[in-house]
Image (tube, rainbow, N blue to C red; front, side):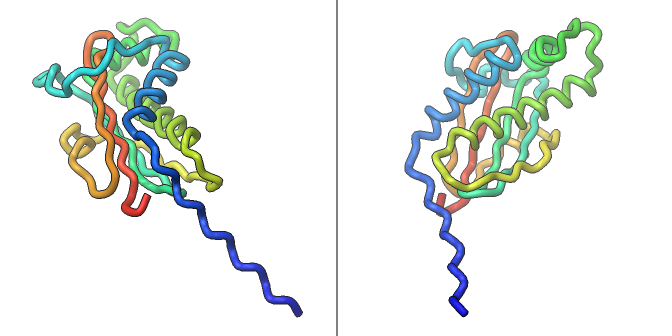
Length: 164
């Protein structure tokens, strides 16, 4: 009886510019799904003191990691309204928070689809959390960028597990 073929080893992810990947993913998702765009990079401190929503989710594959975001509540409201086709004034706070989770989910899904790998990915469920937890430093390869958007700031952190 012939020996079974060994499972193929996952190919390592080629070295990529994670900052450029974040720029591409954020611009594409904001434009196509939320009918919005960035006004360029900014400092995450530019909206210090403004109320923010934050969400994060993990992904498993090759590589595995986490995508987290923090966005000013004032900026998330028009994004949620645009996505849902609703009037901002009619959106309950709960729904604006759910849309922050959905934004994180879309960004993560788009990001993993841009990775040059033959592996499939499993995305976790996005969770709302405090901005301090979502944006806390992580081990591994990390990219962090902030963009000015209508009425606020969006900060995204992409962390890839060690060895990625």
